[in-house]
Amino acid sequence: MKIKTLNNVNFEYKGYDVSGTHDDPDGIIVRSASLHDTEFGPNLKAIARAGIGVNNIPVARCTERGIVVFNTPGANANAVKELVIAGLLLSSRKIIDGVNWVGTLTEDVAAQVEKGKKPFGGSEIMGKRLGVIGLGSIGGLVANAALGLGMDVVGYDQHMSVEAAWRVSNNVHKLDSLNELYATCDYITVHVPLCDDTRDMINAETLRMMKQGVKILNFARAEIVDEQAMLAALQQEKASCYVTDLPTDQTVGVPNVITIPHLGASTAESQENCATMASKQLVDYLENGNIVNSVSLPDCTLPRSGSARICVFHDNVPNVVSQLTSLIASNNANIVGMIGKSRGNISYTVIDIDGEANIQDILNIPEVRYARQV
Image 1: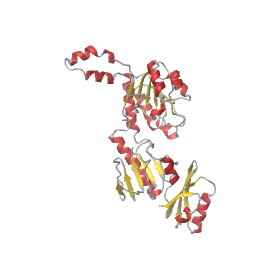
Image 2: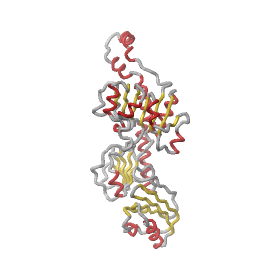
Image 3: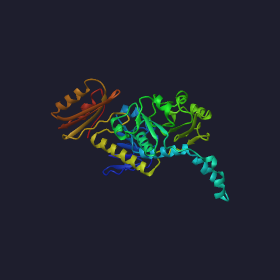
Image 4: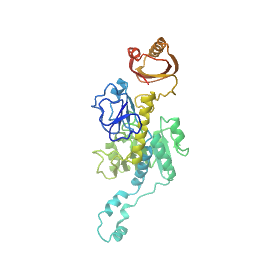
């Protein structure tokens, strides 16, 4: 099988034809290169994004074609966590201003430093309250790390998974209301995906609820913060600092805004972790039909059994599965394992059989979008 790699993503599995120039690969691994204008060939089965965001991938078009789109949640979580902690410290101590000032000194530096350092004082984070919005792979690590630095940490996550709950320390107090978090925290950091519910969630109304001098950190998506409201709050001294890893035309060069050039995942370790995770997920899908961390479909995995496996994308409507099982039975094959999952108007069914199945007969079912045997 052919794998096309973009953005110098490493793919180290043997037995694959790997190149950055394949015209019609079976799988694509990508970081940031845009695929919106790419025409996908008939052999393409999956795209693996070595990272979280998939704005560079036409997910809806892929889903219609039965092309699975993967991302790698958690692979860069530690790198982002460390930068968020750095952001906490930068927002509390005027380190950047001080460093820039020292860079202007040319002689008698030690004496000038002692004489002129007073404007660059700050405050400690120990004992201060940090509110973490979103306690997933990144937010959970931030919360735990802040506890280790002596902060009082509270969190809010409306959709917290059981797995995430196990990872977050019991000493992180989980709040039932965002309003309580807004009203009581000295620092607030957001770690949620961008969607209709989170767009502009930090806005003029929510800022009014916050403590005087609150510090906001945004390492998620720029659109989660209403920047005009944020800049107004800074000007009115309602907020004392805004730290973002997502600079825009509106935030660059503004006093009390610390703009970091999107460095959250920019570590060698993070890049390697993302590439490894993306490759593993892609190979498991190509070889076994298992889906883990797809942005278009729910997780769907089944231990292998039988002599063959049939993987089918189809419309999420009644009677499709019964048609599949009838066709398999008509070929004198026996079903030894099966799983199916749905999201929206599309379903994915994996069937292990003893025997053979006619894939063309399956493709002839009107509701079937894509089928293959692995």
